[in-house]
Length: 390
Ligand code: SR1
Ligand code: MG
Image (cartoon, rainbow, N blue to C red; front, side, top):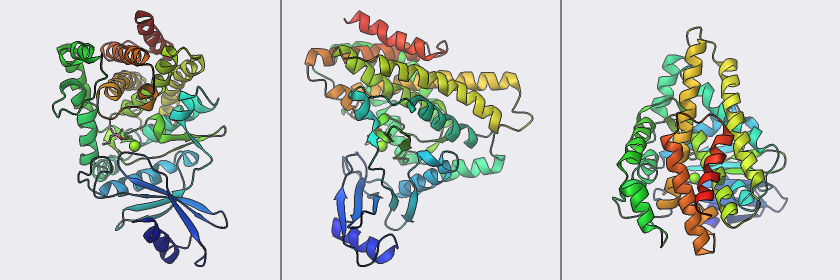
């Protein structure tokens, strides 16, 4: 809908505003896929409206609007576990593929905050709680068997998964669609490290296969710092349209990677980054701690609560997380969907260096994913490669 149509729709069909109110509609979305508006009345009431088009916003290719139902239902379900971290939902219209939700205007985008070197003290606690409380309760270990299978079926999301299967797991290593954009000066480096590296490709194929076939839990599916809005008091997680049943470590690895980008950025432009390093360390360590705690809190089935099983289950989540951290790091450098943490490094030599640090760290993480157990080890990997390119 255009702004006038949206305004008429809201005034005539919903009881959110007085019928006689004048409302202002402003487009605020800058994502690749959908359209997002802030709608505000003269009396100061405001909401966010997200509409899902039948065409992808960035490339205009067709995309099913079923994703709006998946986003809505996923937000609704996750709100039961982390009510303060999901924008409140006011309305869903299946025909118009439209969700009306809380306006989280007073919150700031986490990606932009970290680029500026700002870290709130609750962040590691909030992110780790979001991961543990939205991921463990939706596994087979907690849900009744048939309910879990119904959920896996309901949340099948082939088109959005297809985007990730290409952009995250395939194109950065093969460029078979010719869409990769490599920074001038890094072409040969990318060929040597990725396109010609059969060993890294074999590890990534394993992670891709697990992404496609291990329906472990309901993922956010695109959990990066651009999907988090935060203030001194808390955080809200948006953009749940990539939700599907996949390996639990995928969400964890995605957010770890996206906390690492501003570290590398600030390292190469020689700005303070210890507070973000500490954020990465404590987010990783608290996630591990809370996965254990939430497992104990929620897994009541007498067979699954076996201690040895629990240890190996959590260990495999951690190694997946480190592997998926690596794939996210690489795809944001080589692929088509980049991050401003790196693309806005204005000095070209610093950008080239940052990209090499990210790729080498990622390869190390993927290859050594079974042996890394703490946030400190991850930061040490990044520091080691920073040292190599100093
Ligand atoms: C065509 S979509 C490109 C990227 O934007 C989304 O936020 C996902 O990260 C996706 O890979
Ligand atoms: Mg998104």
